[in-house]
Length: 191
Image (cartoon, rainbow, N blue to C red):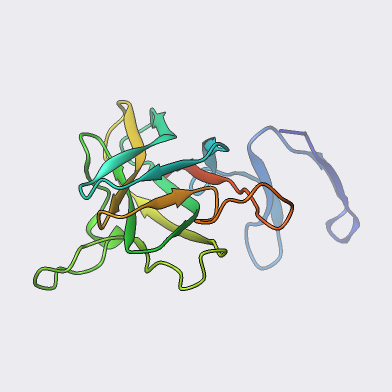
């Protein structure tokens, strides 16, 4: 972090910040450099999947290359996560983030239970036009309550027909057909 020097003539003071400090109003008539603690980003990790894959498995399974392990600095840290999946299908497919032993990330990260419906974070209904693909992005916050390593991963479930990641259903070799990327990013937010 760069050290910032400020000259505030209204209070006739020059001062230099230490690392991790911010110029802050300390009262209605005074200001000073204060330590910043809560809300700082401790670490950022990103996994990027650039190759293509297809799946017909109608059970939850990992998406290769979209797995990250992070060790929080403290049990009070939060983990901010965001994923983006570029894909296409001619049927139904579902994606959700998980952590640990394939348990669900948090109850807020998937839809409510409703009879036999699949609880998921993001869904693709397929395309009536097989030359289309979409990119779905979702973000959330997890409270792992540990200072041990936690593994986050993206998982996929399809309805038994093909779901394609990073490509269109139709994949003709010409400039009209694109290839995309899918990502998983996690950030530790210090308490």
